[in-house]
Amino acid sequence: MEKWRHNGRLFVMLCVLVSVFIISGCESKEHSTGNHANRSSDDKNMKVARTKVDQFANVLDLSANPTEEVNGVYDTNKFNHFSDLGAWHGYYQPAKDNKRLLGGFAGPLIVGEEYPVNLSDSIHRIQMTNKGTNERYDLSKSKYIDFSSYPGRLEQTYALDDLTLHLSLIFVSNRTALIQTDIENTGEKSLELEIAWKGSVFDSIVDGEDKIDIGTSLEKDGNAIQVHFSKVRKQWEYLATDEVKYTIFHAKNIDTKINGLNYTSSLKDSINIAPR
Image 1 (tube, rainbow, N blue to C red):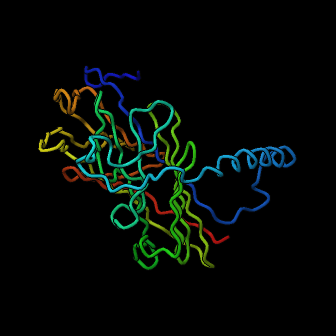
Image 2 (cartoon, rainbow, N blue to C red):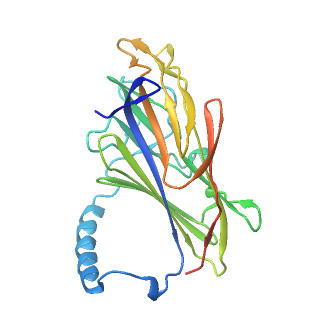
């Protein structure tokens, strides 16, 4: 169990969401590295392994529109979620008819010591703005949208007029999920984009006729956003302490603004993507 001290207090890491960022444009040969013969062999082996995994796409329906109420009519989870490596949290694919959820993986669902609850409907969604035109990309107007789940990973693809956005989520430990963001310039001109992420958390859960205040709050911490919890001991419904945290960490420098239970994190620098 991962623990650390902050201001003299001992905290336990509930879960971590790490966000990494990749841009895809043209690559010159003089900047490529590595042994091409070995790489070709490795790529072939990886392709064979991935092909076997890809034969099991979308075996389960992981689409969801998460709310404060996690259980369905049979007192079991209303939606299927994806988790791996023994993690106590998981994610959904967003319901395509909910425009607000596009651009991120829905959830997360967390385990309140014993009981699963939804911490958010969408805790981490990307927003892209063309700096040249000052127009924000509307993912609901994508020419092509694909949400796919495979053993060990979730993937999303959005094809727009001049770029393709690809998101993938995997678990790298029993505490940490990793989201990789890949933007490819498919147009004929260079793109300068401003990138931000938005998210929010629930401050209550619903169990039947009971509504339970879970006392969540947000705090920015450098390139991270911390979700704090309050001590709640509702046997048979929800258990938590004020010594656990959920953390969203960005690999690149961000500026974060918090408004109550909502946050917006923006890359400090715009990105330039050359066409392929």
